[in-house]
Length: 429
Ligand SMILES: *[C@@H]1O[C@H](CO)[C@@H](O)[C@H](O)[C@H]1NC(C)=O
Ligand SMILES: *[C@@H]1O[C@H](CO)[C@@H](O)[C@H](O)[C@H]1NC(C)=O
Ligand SMILES: *[C@@H]1O[C@H](CO)[C@@H](O)[C@H](O)[C@H]1NC(C)=O
Ligand SMILES: *[C@@H]1O[C@H](CO)[C@@H](O)[C@H](O)[C@H]1NC(C)=O
Ligand SMILES: *[C@@H]1O[C@H](CO)[C@@H](O)[C@H](O)[C@H]1NC(C)=O
Ligand SMILES: *[C@@H]1O[C@H](CO)[C@@H](O)[C@H](O)[C@H]1NC(C)=O
Ligand SMILES: *[C@@H]1O[C@H](CO)[C@@H](O)[C@H](O)[C@H]1NC(C)=O
Ligand SMILES: *[C@@H]1O[C@H](CO)[C@@H](O)[C@H](O)[C@H]1NC(C)=O
Ligand SMILES: *[C@@H]1O[C@H](CO)[C@@H](O)[C@H](O)[C@H]1NC(C)=O
Ligand SMILES: *[C@@H]1O[C@H](CO)[C@@H](O)[C@H](O)[C@H]1NC(C)=O
Ligand SMILES: *[C@@H]1O[C@H](CO)[C@@H](O)[C@H](O)[C@H]1NC(C)=O
Ligand SMILES: *[C@@H]1O[C@H](CO)[C@@H](O)[C@H](O)[C@H]1NC(C)=O
Image 1 (cartoon, rainbow, N blue to C red):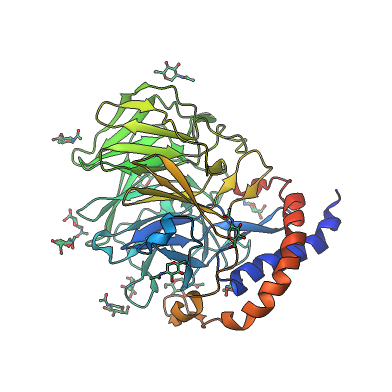
Image 2 (image 1 turned 120 degrees about the horizontal axis):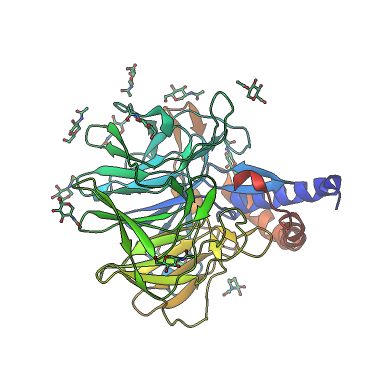
């Protein structure tokens, strides 16, 4: 199909996405977002969507679900709440929620002007304070390592002394001499008590990105899967787990027995109370990201260092996702958004909940019919850090129009999405 044919479709698709976001108070489909729990609020930051042919748009909107509403864990339609927008569009960043639920720090990512594909860089670390008028700010960091600028596709963890550990990742903006993208094997540590940064290069670790990271209560960080970059890219062997001791700062490899687990890239992981790490999703190859990693769900026992594949009913099994996000709340692993494998890059708009005790999936119905909650709880504020003002949206006004025109648009747009997303957009791989 010739590109110009996409133009009217693209317009319709943009209208459709805008309609979803503006009118119906549910987040649009997206991928490459980052998420964190603050108390019972599950926050989603950034990510991207595709509105025109091959042009990804970085998202600035911030949404949360209130998990204290237990109906979320049945099959109810959840109520989404919108919060103050991010100062920049941010893709493949990583965030942590500081302990005692005070605030969230967002690290790195590919940054863009809001709702655009124009690269824009301001800061590598943003702070968001949901308990203080949802203020976004940039904090001065002592001894910040400038090689971290635009670092993306890495995962941050935070310990109970409020130290953040971020291993590896890659740069998005290339060197000033236009040399190729850089990949890292360093541990960047930010002490958020005094905002002091340090970088520890780990010579024996290969540069790695798109892995999953879990901090165990023993202070050991476990790195699972992802892509190594040595002379070229290669998927990490899932039988060889890398760890970092946050006390001794020693990096080591652990051989894992048990079930055979294929390579995983852009997957997610959560830690259960019993020390089991549950991983979900991901893609199989480092460059062709459209092939589903197998198995889709696996459990790493960190006491015996063995892999197992849970026997789980196919009921409500999520689409095979990658570059989604996951958090654990009580016994629930909450998986959201991301790209769907083997569909030529369709995006997912749904939220899935895995009960990690019973090992059953619950699908949260994200149908665009929820109209309450957001406009009343949406916060209005001027973002002083960035000079970006957010006015309370006139959501309510559009709801009536939205529901009617939505039925028509959804039909057209579904078809358009199908056509559009058949093409892979390589720019965000
Ligand atoms: C819980 O969610 C349901 C479905 O969205 C909603 O009808 C109900 O009002 C919510 N309850 C509370 C306490 O927020
Ligand atoms: C978190 O809260 C607990 C209980 O209030 C307190 O004992 C602890 O010192 C707090 N931790 C930090 C890092 O503020
Ligand atoms: C970005 O798009 C969202 C959704 O359409 C909108 O709510 C928001 O105001 C836009 N942000 C900017 C800075 O234009
Ligand atoms: C809330 O934010 C304001 C403005 O940045 C700051 O002065 C104040 O100390 C913050 N309050 C708390 C409790 O963090
Ligand atoms: C950050 O550092 C700069 C330069 O040292 C200083 O001018 C600025 O006031 C500092 N900002 C904050 C928020 O501390
Ligand atoms: C890097 O690439 C840009 C855009 O192609 C070009 O304008 C610039 O001169 C290049 N810089 C160097 C040092 O080659
Ligand atoms: C920040 O605190 C840590 C831990 O207390 C300490 O080791 C470090 O030297 C401090 N950094 C600065 C710049 O004060
Ligand atoms: C900053 O990070 C780079 C890349 O890992 C490393 O080579 C360099 O030593 C670091 N600089 C400092 C001051 O730690
Ligand atoms: C992964 O590592 C295991 C154990 O070291 C080895 O048996 C297996 O052949 C490796 N797999 C691949 C694909 O290299
Ligand atoms: C981490 O290193 C410290 C100091 O060497 C050691 O006491 C501790 O047992 C190590 N932790 C793990 C989980 O291996
Ligand atoms: C989701 O909710 C809508 C509206 O209530 C309903 O029409 C649809 O069948 C539900 N979908 C699922 C999968 O339960
Ligand atoms: C980048 O952030 C700084 C600190 O908040 C702010 O002063 C500056 O205006 C920002 N730059 C742009 C272009 O928004």
